[in-house]
Amino acid sequence: MAKRIPRPVLGSPFHLLVLLCSFALCAYAGVRLLDGDWLMITVWFVGAALIHDLVLLPLYAAADRALITVTAGRTAWVNHVRVPAALSGLLLLVWFPLISGRVSERYAAATALSADGFAARWLLITAALFGGSAVLFAMRAGRRRPEAGE
Image (tube, rainbow, N blue to C red; front, side, top):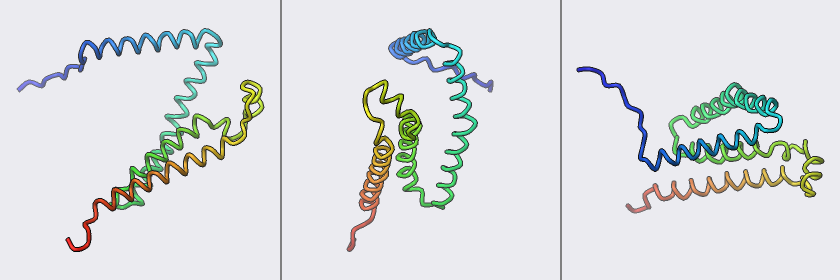
């Protein structure tokens, strides 16, 4: 029996139209973005990709592997740690300049707002994410346990 070469999945005509529109929007945004200092913007994007792939990805892959190793078969709660940790890490990555206070003066000059409180708010959001995840895990764990007398 001859091996069949898999065909690419093209999807419906609507799916193709949406995909082409998203490519057109990305191309437009790229042209507008690179209209200014295109060399520094390109260096920033390439640097961000390299830092993610060479530094951040191995770090959070190792942290995830350590989490799985620590649970040793009790994997029911792993995602209840993964999701808030990932969201908190993403918020830290996006807002790091303001959380660390490195750009407080520039932020205040550009927006006329104070940059104070970003670290406290990030910590509160992180605590709320982990707390909400713990409550959800407790509700799910309580639902799984058979009641006494059954």
